[in-house]
Length: 589
Image 1 (spheres, rainbow, N blue to C red):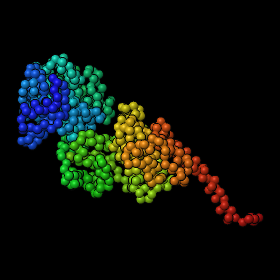
Image 2 (spheres, rainbow, N blue to C red; image 1 turned 135 degrees about the horizontal axis):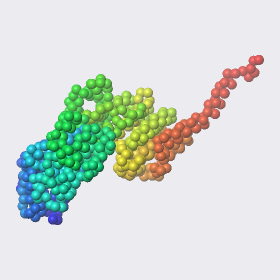
Image 3 (cartoon, helix red, strand yellow; image 1 turned 30 degrees about the horizontal axis):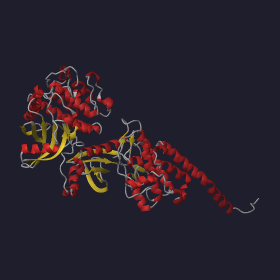
């Protein structure tokens, strides 16, 4: 049935009365709509699910699903507050669930392992609750499982449940078979073991990022696809997804007990950050007090040492290991965004994979009371931006050392399948010894899964130091990092970025001309060889740059050696002159 959204909202408002205000449409299909609403009486957000179909099988199906949901009272199952029909318009009102569909979350990559643990506990608990009330869920699609910032899932769809089975349209029965047990696909009502299979399929999707094979015999163990996955999932899912129902766990509770016997029953503090809540201006001003309370007996907050658009960095004392660390915390307002929370976790995970003397070490990740943080090695020194601001352009030898150490770190990262994507002076820290430490892999992406050296398409990086392809939102690869490192080197030699502008468009326009600052004219001490190396690394066309960090490194080493050789005759002549001054015209015999 075709109807305009304006007409639908008008008719729905007339049907539900003044108590509920419709705020926005969240999702829709040809005959079903989901709206965010507000209960004016109880001052709370609600969901309004609407069906448009003539009275008959489809409307009865919608009504029976609402009845099934109303039979259940579990925190991991959507609640139903009210239901009604007017002609072809049917609606139900339920609790509003903050989060996103599991399918949306997995598009960014497999779920964090602690989040899968939380999802497993919630899902199996919900299924056991439904079974004790005589309801078999039969199918759970990832899109109908809403996951919040804490990782907990909420089941929102019982349209294929045993309660509504007699009114399911024939053309709906075969949809989503990867998340149905074999017997349910064949038309059986199913039993608790059928839902055990469905739970296994959903957890498989969450931990691997892939739909399970339709044939149970072809199931690939999760650890083959994701080596970091706990081995308990290989055993758990292999049993849950047997073709023979009698070979599976008989009940969801049996599967729950087997899972918790190894994974435990307590949610990890590293994942559970609490439900999202509105952040007022006052709470933003005083959130540091909340942070101190959240850190509890684990860390003592000492002082703030930096901040950016994504989070803040503090000096803190690890009270268990009795050492001072850097603690990076996600801005509280961003914990309401699942994508931001996962990006923050990914930053810690990616950086923790790297073991290199020029990369900052990651120690731990944790969270409580709506806050999320990770701790890392504290570098007691300035970043390159602070150093140049304090001392001005740096000596040639110091820049050469920075380039060598930076290229070594990037070669290691690129070899591990990671592109940093935000190399800039602020992310390049210096130890008291002068050694370089690269930090902040927040924009890094895993290259595996996107081609050997290919990357996702996205706009990222800091404009003055980002490559043209990044600013254009095109595909990036390791050469983007090499461009940024060369831009940083130019900055340290001249005291300013190689390309400046009032906005991204102006910077991009200068980049694409390949007209670089005359570094050699401003810094004749660096020699033409180093200037040529940087000029190639800063080419707008990635194909014209160095292909790898190793190639850049060897070009730099050759230029440095050539510079020394060019300088050697001058120093040899000076030494000879000094020696001659100290010698008599006629040596004694």
